[in-house]
Image (cartoon, rainbow, N blue to C red; front, side, top):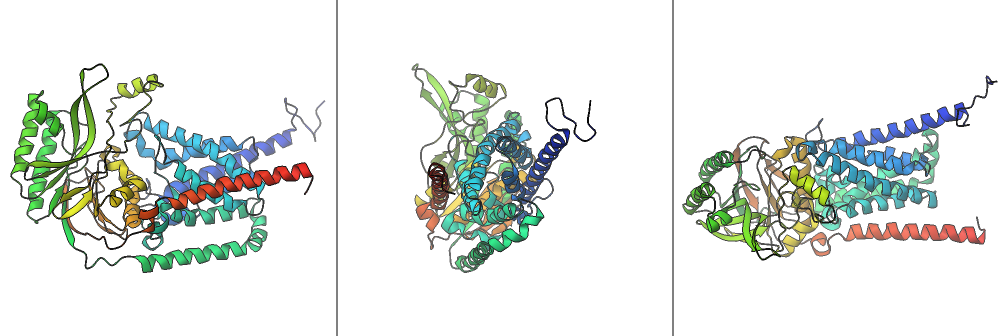
Length: 545
């Protein structure tokens, strides 16, 4: 007989309790999805090409609330959900990059966050009063570690949301992007834990942690003051007049007719740019196809060679250097002793028609440019090949070009999202960073803006100017203070000429020490968790409270 006051489900759980559990889970999921929206809108998004960067300071509040409220059974699932949903929304444009990309990237970050959420929960459990400080260190460690190895990917790091907040990001010259991430994440961790028990816990938390808030306020103001006083004066620095050609062709259209069209645009726009007396002309990543050196050397394809020959004749008549993104193809003997073509994503410097130097891309895009596990994961390799993936070989030299009186480096596309690469180029002598990019495959201005936002930090970290020459956006010039000097409209054919300061008078802590701040966060994270676990075990064995 059923009781009007106490019904049980088939599993023996009281229905009232079951409904409460369902409601609690629904509440947690709703909070996480709110966090996904806030975090994604902090960056350039489908609703704003530039992003709403103030949202980043509160975007992780729902995440920290869920971590505190969740039990150990559900924490991994919440991490999976948050990671998958965040990168599906933040990087929605990946659907245009590769059939697998919009699935692979969210799955990878679902796995990452499934590991990070329990660590955040552990910090909260081990240190009920100040665990949120350890949580911040863990989050920064996660942001740093996910850049490492084959799967390294920089999109969505908290600090990058602040690329327009020029005074704040100047601390990147000392800490890299990680110091900016610290200032961005702190309010979310603080308020997320303050609201972990609902609004009723907020006043008591704020009273107990008012000193923490004051200390953060002091650090924030100090960072702003540093930002205003540390910006360099480059007014007396020499200028380098750079012409950046944006040909705006569809990167998915291959074949000689498409390559012919692209070359016509490049030459026409370059001729127009030459009327403004530039010191150098820069074309975008893989702006010209086919491989110039391969077809000039081997001439196995007469039609491709004729196109290469036409380009070389054009370059031979120029009085200024040209920087060209192109595939560098060579024949090498494989393990069987037979000749095999090997291609590199490369940048070529031509001066008076002669090639001076070549840079081969060091850091390749995982899955779409490089896949080192073709033996262990042969099924995935075959799937990638079946989807028309073109693999490149990686270069091995930090090439520094010298032209028109300036030494410069040319990180290719994805490479300017990694701070260590630009740092190493500067340490090798680069006075200006010249990025060649092709993001046109995304058909998305927010995608291009997310990429450009990370490039801003490379200038501040090393106090070097950067120019970005792209196929369809974002072609721009950025000064050594991270200020966007000029931006050419995306998805428009044309060129931009800019006098860029060649500033080398100031070195930075970041250029000298690299990611020391991220290492410090990693040490604090590991050390804090070890100390917390040891203290908990000690209390358990000794019976102490």
